[in-house]
Image (cartoon, rainbow, N blue to C red; front, side, top):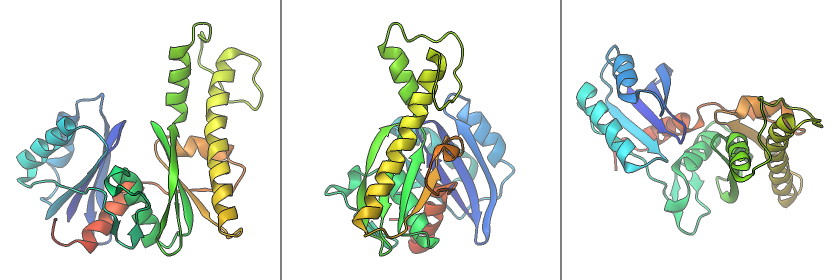
Length: 250
């Protein structure tokens, strides 16, 4: 059994992975008492053989997790860092380590599960877009604010855009609150569609699966006018594939 850790910008997700799938899983937001919640969840679990983590957060939070894992399981955390190539995926970045490990592992999961060629959209604090060929070549991608961060940025940078109530998502809004929410969410949907269309044209119209993950993926899915599907827990699934391909921590 392996303990897999996905340290994202908004929350930490974890899973106990057996050969046939997850035996337990959970998530904790960074604003909560992470140490107490993980201790409560993990003290009823069996001791894992290995602990693997993927992180896009700071070293202090990584150290916090290492301390909890060591105290409960007496195991070190093997942090996966983005390589130039692994698990059949080749990184497009000239400086491979600058590609977020979450994005790389999502591509590893997609290829391992037969979903390539594909476009992967991670919709959370940030919107990340990546294109992957059937042969496992990463073509590159884009990064933009996620829909909620986009709203927060707009409200923080303007004086008169101060809605007095939460907005609703509409095609055309007749008030400021709805206009802010609708504009930000539709902007994210439009960028995803534009990127997916560009990649499809590059590949002579070949069908590309569009995979969505992240905390806001389910809310965004109905806004898209192109076929798309949810690929949940892609980082954890990518870690599971990585663990199988790297039986010894490097």
